[in-house]
Image (cartoon, rainbow, N blue to C red; front, side, top):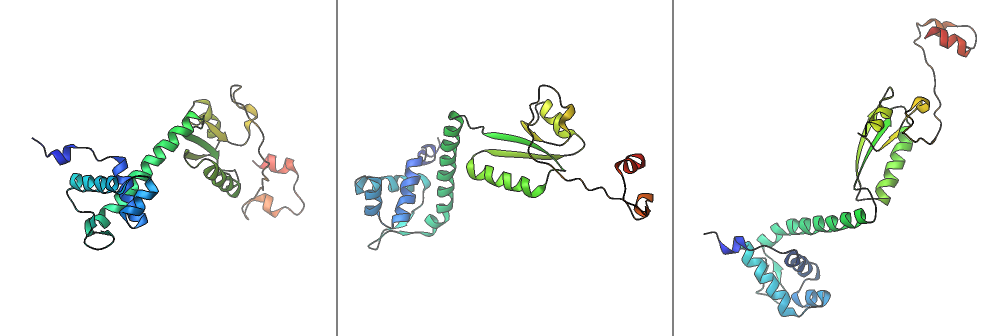
Length: 201
């Protein structure tokens, strides 16, 4: 036979009442905020203490004071309630058509500052969307989108992308060609033409 106290479930409502008492500083103020009678708040806390087998508040004074056990368990209670709030918010977002997870592949040539600005705005507008980001090179972005690994890709040179991939221009990137000091192009005495560079590749 198990311990009945351990077998009984701790409810989210009990944890919220616990947090409300902590935030308001008294059972009576918590009752007013929750729109309940004070006896209901006291009963909820007593049940939570019984289920946890610890005393959460010292009630010997005029106002309840967190015990050492109450202080230790407070972060866990907050974490549980925050996670549950996120669960409900994410579920609402899904029902409203917001993707719960976004896979994005970005070519390494894409400007990092613009990418970070866009990701920051995405996080602010859709804080519950989980983002999986991949940085790729040499045309890998197109392949990741084509095979369904990533939902969206930001790449360069998409002229030969498969027909099933829809593409729209985002920006232009200035490409600067460089050569090692020992390369013949670096020793040229005149401005270089595109043909010079093409022939040297």
